[in-house]
Image (cartoon, rainbow, N blue to C red; front, side, top):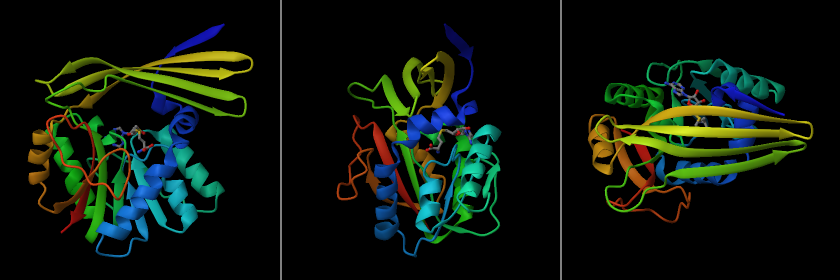
Length: 260
Ligand SMILES: C[S@@+](CC[C@H](N)C(=O)[O-])C[C@H]1O[C@@H](n2cnc3c(N)ncnc32)[C@H](O)[C@@H]1O
């Protein structure tokens, strides 16, 4: 029998981490290339705002970087800290709002890769977030920020699916755009997660909201945060050799911002 749960995927870090944790390599490698190419200082300390389960942070910790982060969801933060601790690293992730935090010692780089920034529902919070990250970085440090823009010409991506398996656990997820309100700058998404073990099937029904950004709106926001200069634009292919130019059709962009 299927157990149906109406809930929040982020409250199930073990499923989130299985789904998205397996996808870490391209992002990780790209981030290291960014540090080497675009930062004007050596990157040894990295911070991830809204780090969730810390699927990338744990990899950086194993490589010898000092890592820290924050997230609003205490389940995700516990999962992340427990994993860091099990591997012999400090419990360096805090329950905090990515639009309202301060760090004790500045970092050389920060990253926020898969649309997470779009969870911030207003311009004021988005701007506050960018100021918080800028304040957390040393001069010459980087903020690598990946988001889907809303194209103003052509088709946009309306759904995405992922499948992941570890041992006897299989997790399938499907996310689709339920409503796009460009006036309110909100995209309402549906999300279904099927969790299979040999003896059970659980289905989690979730919804989430993302603030929308056209290229122009994103540029207008970035202009309000002069602490950052845009040093490069890439896309979700995570190919350091290939910079992109944003056009009206562009959807996925990784902004590489450098702290002035
Ligand atoms: C798509 S997950 C990304 C997690 C992680 N950055 C990654 O790449 O796997 C989005 C995360 O953002 C967190 N989040 C949403 N709004 C937040 C806020 N205002 N402050 C901190 N975390 C937030 C959620 O709890 C969730 O863990």
